[in-house]
Image (cartoon, rainbow, N blue to C red; front, side, top):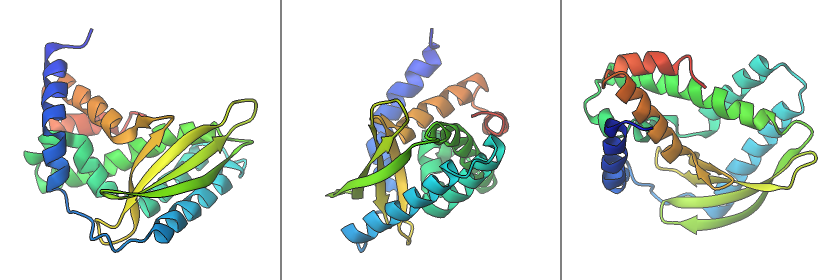
Length: 202
């Protein structure tokens, strides 16, 4: 059963989620619908190449990490995932956490994408949202029904990047914010300890 501290953290996080997002650099909205679609199209093409490469899982995950760095707004995603605790973190702690976070996400979701072997991702639709563009893709797997993978794209960091992802409707950032909050609770708020744990998780 979740601890009282985890319930409290989840409640506080939900209350502060909107203000924290508002505090992040806002997109200049210079990005166009075609640019957002092209970014995801290129990323999907690269993901499909890795899926079809026949390489070992460790090799594929290394390549997924390179793609994550290339296409994702990693610093903003990491800062959001740390939640309110990011406010008390030093610059050094934020850098270390961001590095650990990118490896963790690459391992966790790289293994999920590895399940697509024999299948593929296809870009389907694009629509404007308040914080940029939503690009919906469909994952086609062998012997399974197709399902949605959605990327949210903006230029809030000065370059076109995706800053969130949904797999079958599951919100990556909110999921990881809860997971990382639980890890911090286990470490009694020790950011360095949580970051060390994160390096071996996923």
